[in-house]
Length: 413
Image: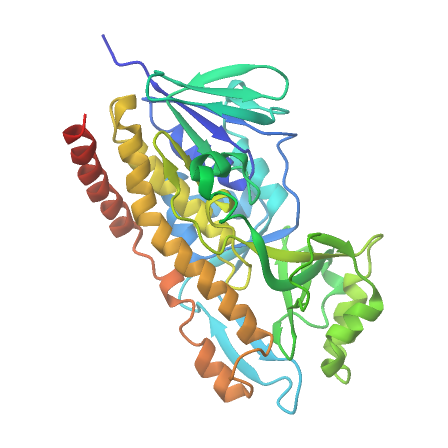
């Protein structure tokens, strides 16, 4: 008699959960169910998928670039260009990022729509807010309980439920409060505007106390405009607040004689209610796995956007989870698979969390690098370890860890 499929619950149906579902449903031995607290939809606007993440996504979805461009309206780019935004060297070229390989900018909602589209309707469960996870060594399966009173039972539970993850609290237990998300020291505000409104300034500008970013999405019809800066009040508990023209002008006061600053402020304010967002992160996470339960994406390693790596790390997570879960043959091996995932993913993601925060400080003029030459030298190479991931080697490392963890669990049974 064939083994019963390993039942896997994915808690969270955003980009991370949807990508993971696409990866896991390729394996016949896994019965995958996806639960989302509300509707299956994404907030926010554009997101960058860099070359490392494209290679990982191509392993999950063959010809992923075609899906991104033809169906999700992604816009391919060959590089991102950084320019000085203020001071005597304003307008000076700093560097182009990742010129040797392709990347895309895509609207989050469009990407989520296309990730979900091929999945069977009967595995997608909307309006299922998690309220409890009940597991013990004596229980054959994990009980997952939802706010509407329903329950279901699984061999594995994966939290893809975002920065304030409920599953994270279960994984970290007594350590959860110590390692909760906290302000990273930056803020941003953004708007999605038609391309013809944003044609005056389409590069990324580095300056004193602030950073300006543009990226084109939606089949080159829309531009995401972002102003980011140093948040001097890291004790603030509200992640979102109204932001005024005066605050934006103060943030860009040293850019006052540069037309790009005024143009960006005008674009940002061209919306009914302009909001500023505090950037939060997980500064540390001691483990991504607890027996048969694990976390991925922002639930595991929420990071600042300064290196454009957050979505890409969720995609890499999905690939490695599918690699290890696709190679086990029984639910008894789930803990070994999750430990292998933790072993290969956590060091890389933690390095990016730390690197991204420091990159933000550099780009906002809070480092010793102040002139164009010093900034160019400081920023050069900071993205290499992210972009240059050898995806096949990463999978091989995960499989080696799985073999080691299998041996540990078998010897301790």
